[in-house]
Length: 213
Image (cartoon, rainbow, N blue to C red; front, top):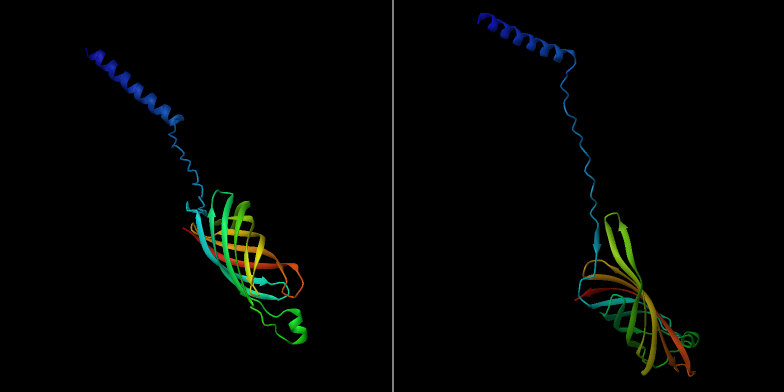
């Protein structure tokens, strides 16, 4: 019995010795390597879009070149109904005061005529080039170049004139409800103010703000 116990003890000690030698010879515990991937930087971009409202109302001011009567300041109101993303209807009312014409300046006289220039028109507009305007890396504004055409009435020199209006404009959406507009218009009508019948072209350049409701 004692011999068997001695053999078992010697075998156990031999196994422990071999295991320790094997660990000393090359079994080295390796710590796992943790790879940290960089978090991609997310850049927030603000992009103003038009609200779901279709009615746009605002004001404008600029310069109106009245043929034969020089240039004057023009102010007015406008309202647009956006039927689709491409087409809209626009109503405009503007007023200005004409200056002296060439005959008055040359002869140092002043004709007794009503110099108030007032007009209203109904135009059909088409958004020709909708796009985006990049202000900086974090601010992008929707914009559009558009064309307008229509007809209306001009009250000038105590007479009413049927008027054809053609033009173009550029719209920048500042906020979801606010837009900035640059417009060019040609108000064309038949006139006999100087005693000669002719078609006049009265060019208007204006800027304005409109809000959606």
